[in-house]
Amino acid sequence: MAVHLEFWQKATLLLCLYGFFKEMKPSEPFLTPYLRAPPKNITDEQLENEIYPVWTYSYLAALFFVFVFTDFLRYKPVIIIEGLAYLATRVLLIWASGVLAMQFMQLAYGIATGAEVAYYSYIYAVVDIEHYLKVTSYTRAAVLVGRMMSGVVGQLLVSFRVCDYLTLNYISMASVCIAFIFTFLLPSATGNVFGVGQNIPQNTDSKADGNCDDEIIVVHKLPGSLNNCGRLYNSWKLSLLNMWHDFKVCYSNKELLKWSLWWSFGTCGEFQVENFIQNLWEVIYPSMSHRKIYNGGVTAISHLFCVGVALLLSRLNVNWSIFGEVVLGIVCVADAFVLYISAHTSSLWLAYLMYILFRVAYTFLITIASFQIAKNVGLSRFALVFGCNMFAALALQTILTTIVADKSGLDLNIIEQFVVYGSYFFIIGAVFLAKGVYSMTRLGWR
Image 1: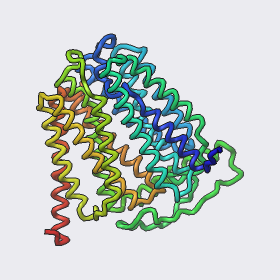
Image 2: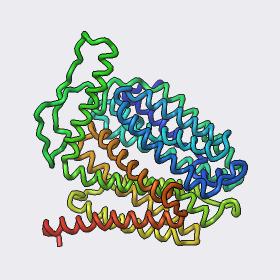
Image 3: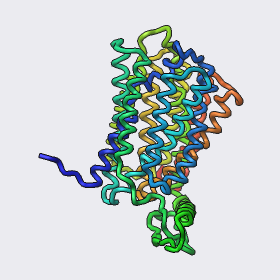
Image 4: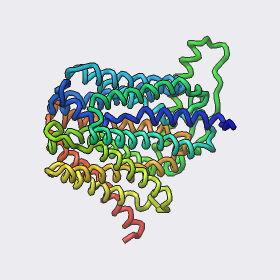
């Protein structure tokens, strides 16, 4: 008996399959050991200061163009570009060699991750608003399950010596190829997320503490006399005007601004740790000298705990508007000590444990931030705020990378870098903790 799926269910299923296969890359937890070993023979210094920083810069540049043109292109072409960029990344990893080639690999990877905004916002343009909560859960779960499975599969294949790192990259490429096929099967989007084709309200007063989704925008039809080029230009121009209007309305909300600030600063730090953690593990326990490493298993376990934390938080009933700043501060200070321990330990197992704690802490806070932002902004404008916050995070990460890791900056070694990242989180935590204590004292929470 054939199963009948509604349109929104088909679109969600295809997008989830794409999300799973694009993330099911068992070679990912072993990227640094793969690049350091023959025939790549990339040194730690080249990875830390010349290759990995390229991802940050390309991600920032790609996100800008994706953010501006995603609604205009109606999402699907951008998702196809994402799949193509992931393919290019795999091709360069397998068949190219040398620092320059690996820099191009990171460039392609930056384009792919920058285009990921389209993956998360596409579904809102093809389903009705009553399905938003469901499809948000499904698409994010697909990505998490894909990452968790990549860690499990990679670790099992390496631990039992079934294959080497190169073969893992071939498996990853096969998975990415399957994902690329699904991009063409996705239905074209006819809706919008950022408000394309809508008229800007005149003389609108923003409410500093209200839900910015309460603003009503009237649909505006372009004159029929315009030729196609004129209509496209006016549509794109109107899209930018609406985005700017929505930006001002949303970020005038003080509660949303608070959580967005943490999102940007916290994500910046998390990206830096995630980008360089394998380099730290290599210093503690070089993979070329020791056969058994468990990067894949640690990745899988961390994602499993992260899923559990996200599910647990969905059942908690806490007034995060009151306690949020204090929790942000305490967890960020704890993150600082986790990174300090990671930088100074000589035990790989302790470093693994610290990484899992860091990932769980970040998931804990980013999930709360997402809930609070969605509550204040409404799901119809969540993609706009998501894009702005990510752009701010990447701009901060670009500055941090240039100063700390880049060859043109301080060019710190990996141990010194993690001390800096720990100090970064300590400062963020201290600021939010002080603000939280002050706010609670004013409210009488002594």
